[in-house]
Length: 138
Image 1 (cartoon, rainbow, N blue to C red):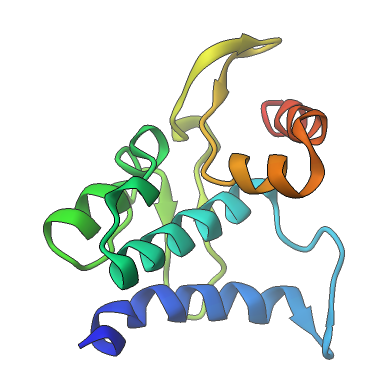
Image 2: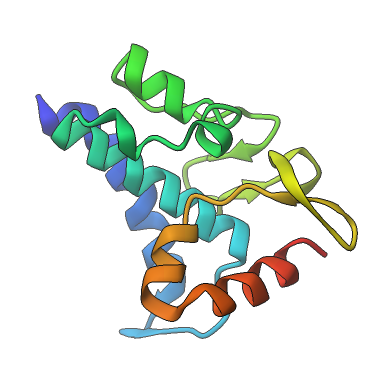
């Protein structure tokens, strides 16, 4: 059952990894920050499917993307096609203008919500997260 339900997420993660990992070596800067956010959302959805803990679902970013509500209510992942388009054989396309934003105001308005914030802050520190989010918000 788990393999059947989690297959779309693992296939998505595998396709993104294949795009970034050519010739056995990961390419630097081959994946944009928003695609990494999609990866973080997919990994959180996988975590929920395996543990059943709803605390891993970040509603501010995952519900507008539809994946948060879809995983909890239906058990199958889906993305809002106005924000994230996933097609077989094509790279993930993220419409930046529709990405969920809010909270503190940056130089260009509200900052984008992030599913990867806690991981970046844990591994690299809060300062590195703020530098990366300022780059993303331009």
